[in-house]
Length: 401
Image (cartoon, rainbow, N blue to C red; front, side, top):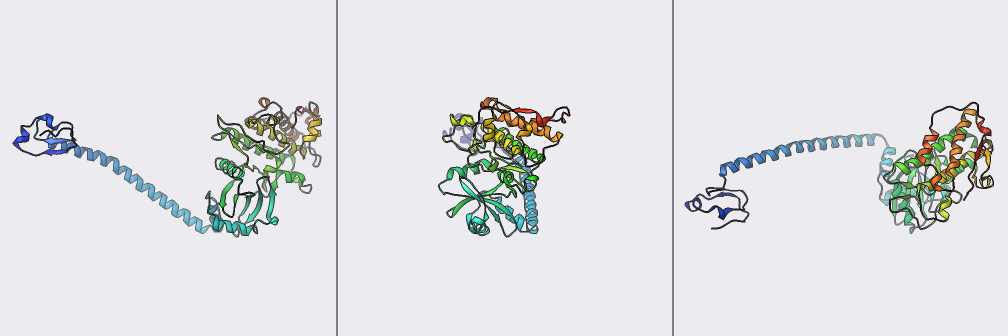
C-alpha cells in the first residue's frame, strides 16, 4: 500500500498492517503521524500544531487590537470634523466641495453658471490664449476665479494646467481648488486674487502709488521663491514657460502668485524638447528662436524681464535694446511715477536689478539659477553709505528678444 507523494495528513489508522508497513510507503506527505515506523507520534505533532496556533494568535491579536483602535480614532475624528463642519456654516461646506479634484458637473456647474450669469462679460476679469477668467461669488459668500476653456478640443492646455498644479503647493503659486469637465463645458476653479494681474496694477495710474518700492521688492521676492520651488524642490523640475506680468496675480496684501500653467512643462531626464514655440512675446528666451530645448533657464530669462518691468513701470524691450552693452544708472531704470527710493531701499533695488541683468544674458549657461536669486535677495548686510546707488551704473546685456 504505497501512498507516498500524496497530500495526506493526520494520524495513520492503528492496525497491525500499518505497524509492519515500510516507511517508504508514506514518504513526502503532509504531516502524517501514527504507528508507522519513521513517522512522528501524533501527540508530538498535536503539540507542535498547538504551538503554531499560539504563534499565529500572538500575531493576530495585537494586529486586531491595533486595527480596532485605529478604526475608533478615525471614527471619532470624522465625527468631530462633521460636527465642526455643520457648525461652521456654508463657507466650509463650500470649500469641501472644491476639495474634490474632479467634482461632478451638475450641481456645482449650475452654481458657477448662476454666479457668473452664464459666463457673462460683466463677470469676466481676464482673457488668455486658452480661456477666459471670471469672478464667481457664490451664495455662501465664497469668491473664486473660474477659468473657462474656450474650446472643448483644447485638451492639451486643460490637462497641462491640472497636471502641473496637482503636483505643487506653494504660497506663491495660485491654488487650484478643482476642475470640472462636463458636456456643457470645462473650467478650472482657483483662489481669487483681489488685485488682479501685476500688469493691471502697473498700468493703473490711480493706484500706482500703492505699488511702492518695498512692495515691489516683496513681489519679486515672492516670484523668485515660487520659481525656485518649481525648478529645484519638486519631484521633477517644472518650467512655467510663460512668466509675464499678466500671469503674476496680487491679493489685497500684495502677495504675488504665479498663475496660468496651461503651457507648463514637467521636465524629465530624457524629455526636455517642445514641438512648438509658446509663451508671451517680449519675455521669451532668445535660444527658443533656434532650439526646441526647454530648460529652467528659459524661466530665468523671463524672470529677468519681469523684474526690470516691475521696477521700470513698463515693459523694458525698446529701452533695453537701445541701451545694450552700455552702463545705465539705476535712476534711469526706475519708474518715474513714484518718488525715488531712499538710500537703504535703493541699495536693495540696485542688488535686485543687477541680478535681473544677469538673468537676461543671451547664453543660458551664464544665467544664474532661481536658488541663487533667493540667496542674493535675502543676503544679510545693510547699505553702503559711501555708495550712491541711484547713480551707479548697470550694464545691460546686448542680446534682446
